[in-house]
Length: 124
Image 1 (tube, rainbow, N blue to C red):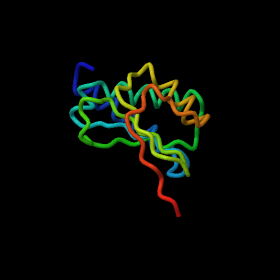
Image 2: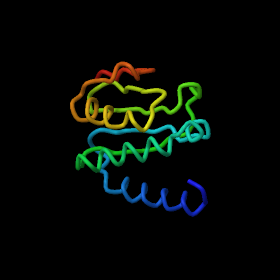
Image 3: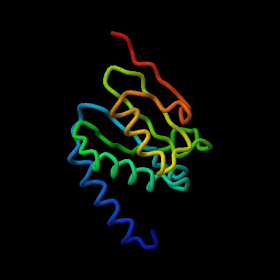
Image 4: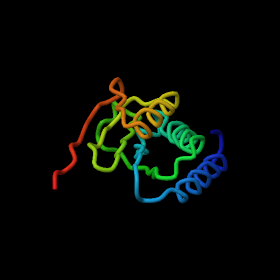
């Protein structure tokens, strides 16, 4: 990305793609604070969205969040599948997108080598 126009075009593309996702199903959250962006969060988010589109997944909602205080682990990506623990992946690169989407989002298999955190779901 070289210009503000490039950034605006990417934002518009990502917003359009995110609007077609529903709020039910799996949620993927990308850390887009200053630290995440500096580490490559835009490229990771684009790769995740591309992989989701390529697989034609309709029940995946992609969101962005600010810094959560683990700057040394950026790029951070959370995957929240219904009824399962929230898994935080760290040091995610665009090349990891296919594995995270294919293994975890689609098949429920956590990508252990990238895990930096887990929040257990609340029991009802």
